[in-house]
Length: 529
Image (cartoon, rainbow, N blue to C red; front, side, top):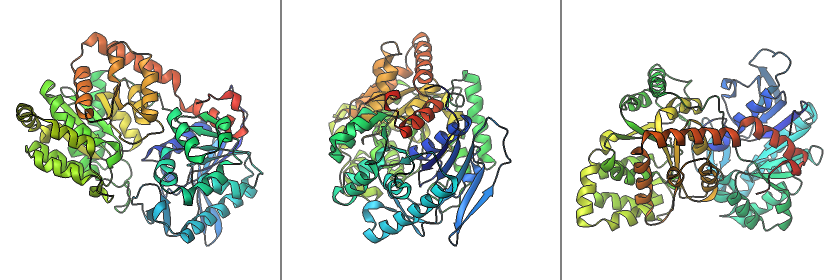
């Protein structure tokens, strides 16, 4: 796509700029657009946008009047600029998965009334309409199937061409469960879009089926996230270990600026530091889980697999990074397994989603594994599980840039999600560090594994993914243990292949250029799913 002249780009996100996948996507996209010389106007609900290094100004509506506050001095020519605006949406923020946010009530779209949804829409439409006339954007991007696209459709009124980036949560957690309410919003928002970007073939197929609009296929293109290959990079073992210790020291001294305690993204830096103090990156074989601690991310499968890994790799240590409503359930499961209480673990598996406030659907794959253990297998499993208290650590939330200090010290990353994922962002970031990502073989995760596998030697290529099903726990454990016990020559060839493939296929500058092409409707410049 070459070098593009600077343009003014309006981006509607509506959530935060760190934490979950779509938040990181929008922060890194904006940062890349700025590096490429563009002028970015980003709408978000982040109250701490001024802490992002690419942000030059922040703006709020105070009693209906837009107030802009510069937080960085004017930059030299050649670099673009970014202003982040926070529309005044009142006390309620509709979200896809129930959560807590600082200073505002976050409630799932499914639980919002029609009147509440309309108030949310009108507040954002008014903000975008004002910016349309004030900054005169040349191109725009809406994030999420609802409500970003319909906000731009109504506010821009055909005056500014825009693209839509589909993230999986809105489609899977909101539109598909309640199509009678949310399909009209989705269709209205997508109808004027020049292009619809998806992270994977799986998401494209799911979107086309849900929308039931054959004409949408011709406007859909692949637009996965990118990875900061300068930040996420392999390190020699000694330097990687130093990175973990530096992260631990920074956390002990308070770490990055803390969020207020009521935020969903709050953490206890001291607790994270104490967790990292329990690992020895020079001697332990570290495996990480990075993701939201909710049932659909499948961390229960990984915890159940860990005793099987420890049977073959006694110094394997699992580092669980993340936050969410299922953390208590995961810690309960870990404690039950460590105590040899398989009956208690089965009780948790039967309770399932009820433990994070959902219905009582069981954790079927976990339950199938526990039920499958014979007498001799149970005895060996219980003996190995005693080490879980020492060999599993929960860090809580880490900032995105802090992951770049932890991942290079890991041997593997597990992505055992049981729910469709539009893209395997954390798997790509691990691969950029030379860390083998072992992912569930479905949706966008499988597509990332497919790309990486083409660059890896056998048998490592076959360890990248595992099938979901009643044998998922055993399959995950087998792949992790095989990789952790592999020889140095295979490990080096695999690491080199992972790094090379990531740098070749994913970069944020490439993502940013793709977004510009999508908003312009230059479909021939983008890959079809």
